[in-house]
Length: 308
Ligand code: PMP
Image (tube, rainbow, N blue to C red):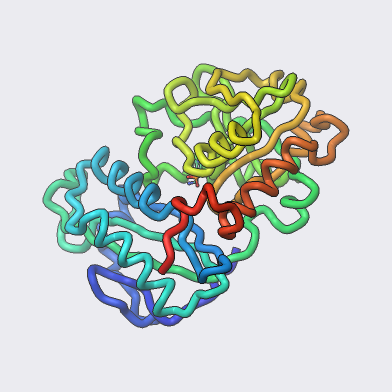
């Protein structure tokens, strides 16, 4: 997905011109992949542009850094303000995608990261639908990947670590080359884990089920939690339970959730249609409620919005 340049990127406390936001080739994170990041969206609302669940994303960013023992020189509030500043100063009134990144800087090499400087950047740019407008409207075709999701004792799956996404990219490329839209990865124990950058839910007999971080090495998704709340408010039962591959094949409905992807119906898994292959009524109801929430159209979800 191409990036549209904006004016400024926040780097270590300053707004730097887009073209000058550069780093040295010997930046530590570039070599060993030990960095942490977030993906956040801001949406236009009736009362101005708002960043969705900003504090929750920045809390997860700091949690990821804590897991990697990165000593972040900014507070939660400073990081939130940096995000507001890039949206404000780039005039991103129509919404955008935000990418905070904490990385190990220039000056040290070798596998002990502890002496490295810790740098922070927050960029933002306008970004369309991640899995395409057609995917959001009509559903996406999924393939179970031959790549397993990380074992949490090999890679800490609770952290959103930059290098960990090699695993996701391998699965994504395999799925695309085979003619599918997106991959579903199984955990090392064979249970369904998640997609390359999204969690997933199935609906069976009116109940929604999604795998939990503890039994499937998933990232604890903020959209997953948002959908859990919205679905319960709509009267659906939501469970965090283990799923196996055939649970997906036999589901009445299925969809994936993520900040970039938003809420996207799954039309098939390994060429088995989910239902009749079209977005089901519960998926559509939850998707609509999600879009209304992020766009500030639902009073009860106002506390999720952070106006810049
Ligand atoms: N799983 C993975 C591996 C991800 O990269 C993401 C995107 N951050 C998600 C799930 C969904 O998380 P969220 O809803 O917080 O964006």
